[in-house]
Length: 626
Ligand code: ANZ
Image 1 (cartoon, helix red, strand yellow):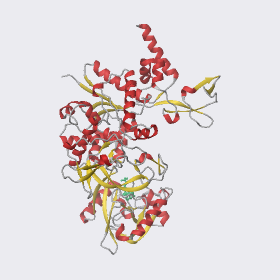
Image 2 (cartoon, protein in one colour):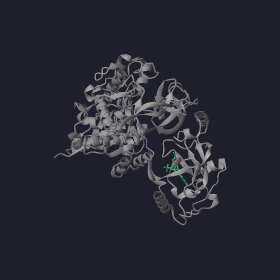
Image 3 (cartoon, protein in one colour):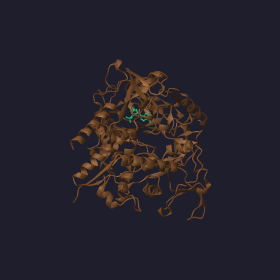
Image 4 (cartoon, helix red, strand yellow):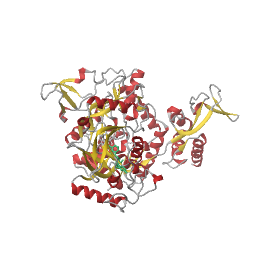
């Protein structure tokens, strides 16, 4: 039987034109694909478009067009640019995530995820831009302000859809071991993002009440050194201890902190009892305790934790050493022998942790516990240009996830885009329906799916892009995982983790044999170029720079220019070289050769005129030879 090889490059966002980063990425993939073809293998090498997303909406508003038209014309343009590069791509497999053919199947997957308990809805705190009336992703909040409006972003509780990526936290972590053909640095980033912590939960009694506060700690061996308990302002016990008006005041106080590193504690008039020493220690609400990690409560051991040390100094709390060290080493967070702890004296950290957990488990006041930093994936976006979520709401506030027979939910073309809020929300013609099952008035979900959902399964759809179901089980088992996946390191966490989650979820729902999407991951190096600027710090395109008598001169204004450092090509610094111009001047072969000859494909490639010229010389020599 013929060997099968699936080569895939991360598909582009159709922003308008391909850039040099694309060229390098796709040339590397092309070489792999041709190599395997020449070996007589069956090669899959598709290309498509990651075509939903915010830039299309913004461009549509700016240029008074429609996101669909803008996207389609960009796809046409970029496709012809890619074709010009003579890439050996299988265009029969082409797909665009914004087409009904694609997203209707994604809606089916959403329904399956929902019924498998892997998609759910809950109230969540989100970044709310009060001017644009939309939720912003964390990346779109710069210094607490909306990136477009500059308005101060508010934290608002909204009901949002989530995918339960935490269900796979342990597997996403442990399977990294098997990804032997992935760069170690990407695996390290994923490991850190998943953030597994092994420790213990311990219950502290609240003095003179029958209430308890449960904390999570990775250092139960330091419990004899506990000098306070701190809980988050959103901890469920807070409402039992203080009035709502007090809570509002504290929240305001915490929000006012300019420097978010400053530790603030509000003492409560309650004490906790250290279960091992029976000592009474104060209880605080503290701004550095996260409410969505562990139990939202900690015991503070100032001698062996930096934050607790700072807190104890500020609030004059005891600093009790329980790990051997010199006083000038405090806070000492390293390993050492346990001291001042009757049950644990003389033990090393790990021995002490095991012993104290065993003690707590016997006394039923604590137990071993594992926590992960990773949170469920919030997939709701209050945006028009995305895949509609197949859900309807009734007037009484209940909702129903649609049946597959009711699909597709088509994104309407006729919308008023004004840059404020979600255009679907004002579109009652689309939004309001009579539910065919109940005959009741209902409203469609107006949130659309995060575009990272689109790219979490496109490599599966490429196998059967015209199939009337999301994928063929047989082909998935036959062709996946992708043998060689090539793309930028910037996707090390989000896209690559989401895709791994999707593959595992689909494996479990559809009983597939494949649990990892990408067998080998190759992260290509970035293309860099010198930067040039004027005395007024305006960036200048390299094509406008001339070297005259040893001086850098602006070709048009004749101004003297300053040469800056070599940096990743980016539009913001204008240090870009346009592929089309290079193809015109040097031809396809020289461009392709230069992409892979001047530095190893996983390293940075500095664009220089001499570099591309020498590739051209090589091609000329070959030409003459033949
Ligand atoms: C007592 C202690 C003593 C701690 C000591 C550390 C050193 P990682 O490794 O990141 O999981 N912690 C627990 N829940 C928290 C929350 N909701 N918000 C802020 N901090 C929290 O860190 C676990 C440690 O972070 C825990 O161990 C706890 O402080 C703190 F010498 O408990 B430790």
